[in-house]
Image 1 (tube, helix red, strand yellow):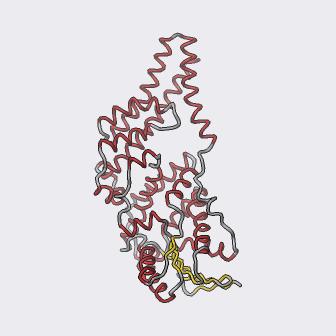
Image 2: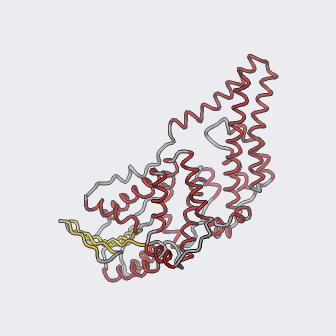
Length: 393
């Protein structure tokens, strides 16, 4: 038997068979949500509390050391810089809104866990690993979608519009991050699929699997509808299926290997048809076409001199291998010679909101080096390829 009631605008009750779910829809930057969560858990005394957190985010909120625990060199080695950029971008957006309403993002989730622990109630973490979510989101987008996403996010960061009292009230009552993602999802449906729809189902399944007859679940208001639908319709969710990071598109792999094959093949053909001197000239052009713009990107980013020189020689080689890009090489060297300090990890979210700080914060400078040298290498590859192929004819 299934029963469903809504006690107020934030709390939803649903009973399925012999199990009762009390689902609290919160705004992640709302003082009101914090009070509602504490009061509901204290009064309901459930068998367990399930919160919209994964292990990483829970530790970050509890220990207040989200960024200083990052191993930037390991992140670069694992090719996770794009997901780190997304993570910082979203955190910056949410923190900016949180400062305007006076509540630190995620406070209600942390308070839910702390209140449960105080009452001796088991805590269940209901969200998918944020690293998997971000990787699935990034891998699901094409190149232009990624550019559109970054443009959307950066544009939002630099908006200086004053927020009215009416807008502040709205922000306090909504899961604003989810609303922002839904807006982006209109332009990029694949992003909404990964960040909203998949997590709705994931959260619902984790809530359903939480031990106990009465479960209080604390989730962003934007997820409530999807969770209730999944529970009411008894939709089965295969968690393993949506925890898999999709491989890169085979088309992208083909394109990735096609360029080096075409370039190397073209230089050999020119050597056979026009002589070794001509082949050498084209090979030199490839080196300069890749090395110069990549080094210019490093210079603009204010990179270490060793980074600037290294990427000049690395870019022509990495451009012929899809396995690693010039940006990763440059970022690793920059992090090695100019490692970010603890205080720069602590202030990265604040500094991200101010463009001038990107050249002062060493962590953000690593990201700048990665982005600008990658851009320079991409431009150089297309210029070099065009010139070499043109010389065949």
